[in-house]
Length: 125
Image (cartoon, rainbow, N blue to C red; front, side, top):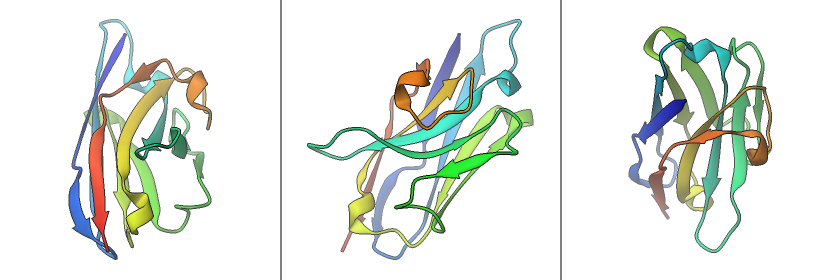
């Protein structure tokens, strides 16, 4: 059992930056490092889309083409926390951002078992 809580969303002007955090609470007997993590987002009226994923060790990372070069995902296993540093934000980045945990590294949301409640990111033009 994993509980995920995102934070760090807000309103920012185009070109600005935000850093999202996702704190994980892991059931006794399990460790955070056994889970691959991902970031997804959902804009109003649109389907949820993949943003970034990284492996259990953090060695392998994959990004959606729309954010590659602007967003950086990372994890701090000691703090049971993952991050999404978002730079050069654009109005089209506006969405609710979710972190998720899975047993394996994947860019597909259906493969993720645990999800946070989401944090709103709004980018004004």
